[in-house]
Length: 452
Image (cartoon, rainbow, N blue to C red; front, side):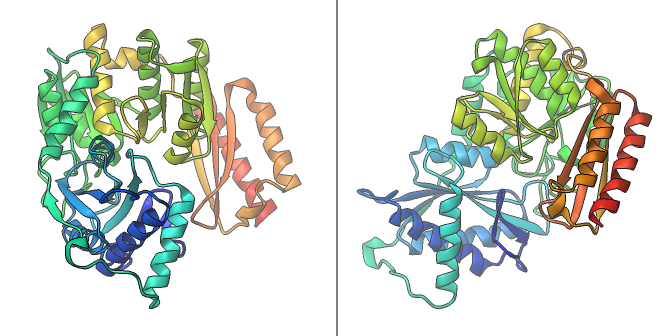
């Protein structure tokens, strides 16, 4: 698997790449590294462990719990809950560590292990590197100190986490959702109970689809990566809007009453205006990645708001927000971070806030989302090229400069080497789709010529 930790924990095919032995070993290593860092000093350590409904999560959870308890960590098993719920409970319960077992929007055979530090924040990169190093050393026979007797960790089920998290979501809503009929697509995932409960308690009339997880059907033709069923259900039920989550419910996409998709950029735009009205948008600034649609940037400029852009990945968005104290950030894919109320992307919270805006204004989601116009976007993947020379090729720089001159202020070019494959992604936005296709095609040819 190369380096174990990616941008969102350790992922792979469960029982092939990600085995019970690995999950146990990583948990032991995490306990040791945090102990060495002083996190457990002066008290008996506690961890919160949750999972999504994947069948493999059952044995991986058992392995993680065994590893932590064997290292002297008390464990609170919160069961099937969204990733942001585990992060929230880690902070709310004063736990020293949180562990979430999920592969998010990936297909069912995959799974993953993600660690949270005290407070529910993502572990620092250097701690992840240290955990990987200690895990590798243990795996190759280096002994580790094992507590005995009363020193071993105790394990108990913590069912109260469900109600605590739902109560938190309701408490931070600026207004109720009475009078709104909302369709929720839960992707047969971790929010199948939480999200309908939260929307119902907030006053909405709820229709659910994709809310019957059986351990095998997570993300299968439903959820935020497959919106067709949600679009049809919203129209069929005459709903005001629809909300779609992914398997671990850290993202949210929406559908308006006509069945049209509302993506992460549009959701961010709607929430930015809402938060400014409520004096909750610090520095009148939104953080997003370089992949955000140019229409999003133009809309914020028109509304007098600032946009700070980061590299692709919600971890970079979160780092920027934490460093400068910004309140709102996210990605086109629907990872939206409302930092005053969550330490990670929270799809249920995002959906609730979006619906609250509709309820309070009396305006349709379609009208609210029209604050930005998505410019046509063309993405071409160019394989089998030297992606390392994207930033140094004079030939490529000349082709990009020519494309930018042609597009002017009404378009945008982005060339990005893939982080996982030997290819370069060419993205072009323009006011006209044919122009975008033409420019993207020429740039793809230039990439092949310069880097092939």
